[in-house]
Length: 261
Length: 314
Image (cartoon, rainbow over all chains, first blue to last red; front, side):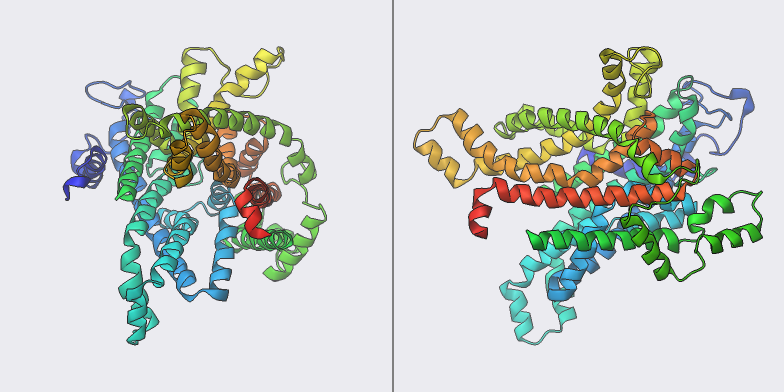
């Protein structure tokens, strides 16, 4: 890891990913283990984050929830960025009618408020986790497409691209070999922001009951379940939300650092 | 100008097709509410499908829905049978009140903060504010709303936890008390993003040649900042605020749902729980139309305000 990336944000994210991967080994309890004798216990030595109405350990559920939340965030961002790069590169490189059509589609997609649209689709579909990744990813390509298009437009006119065209490189080769590699820094920033947005969207959808469905735990649906008993068991609402917040702050500050170069 | 209008119109058409197709193409579609109900028999579903025209080709359905929609026939709410248009219109004032108050607060707070930090770039204050705004744009809005509710309504008991008005006391203090928490959530969310945007565009403006020239010919620093740099930076800011309309709609849905604010966002959430498909469709179309309208307006405003664009166009 280059020293410029050894920031608190990256350390926090790495720790989180390791903990999520190792959840079966580090979680003190099984996430679904019901313990009716110790229901609604406040945070303490045995249950660091307390327990919920069924006596399930909140810390363990938060750790397992991290797997779902991070996976949905990363995979949906991967999908969104792939789509965005493809659409943006096509629009920027081919230009003319293709550009106009793709950019109008991008404008249209950006005009539909994203969260309500996904909430309606989530309500109809009751999505499984892969379906949720698909939904969030397909709704998230527009920002990357715009960034990629702008980069491609500025790069394709440069001398080295013209030179490759002059010596007879195919369009594919020009894009893959010469244009896209130079657009990577900008795409990396867009990708980082897409991960943060994916995590926020997943948690918001799950909070409204139209995202990750119980019994699987995600940070968002833990908050959905916490809402009704929030006044008596505030720890149920506190910890999962804090995890979302810290993760997204870390991701956004990483994005900011990447943008600064 | 005319071509811009034509473009907006085209955009609206694309949006309507995208929304319609997405909702109708997914399994379940508009009849989800009935499919989930164990008391509705399969043959009833088939009858409903036929009577609502859902067995016709998708494109035909789209055309008939679109022609109804532009004529103001938005259908009837599945929940209470009233016309969808009536249900939506009666919720508009509450939403305008909440969004209006929070946007005014966000703008009034973000402009001075942005100017303040832009002229002190790299200093402690600037770095602290950068951290604060980064945190604010990373907040999950619904969780922030829950925490505020817990803190100020449940534990401290200073403010009501939800709604727009109390049953008995309907004075100004009661109104302010109710709107304070939801407006804070929205204002923090949007204000933080705007501070970041305006700080960077103000910073760029301060590095421009005309600012250097103004300073060189002895214009006072205050005048340079506010007349030369801020004016330049505020122009794109005006359009950024208006272009954020789609994000503001999403924010309103979250905030109104958590605080049971009786606006459009609250209606959307009620309709979502009951799978009230006609209301959901109308909400999506109406809010997308508002977003497109505002972006066309932002464009026109930008032309009107910026002499450089005006001159270049003529």
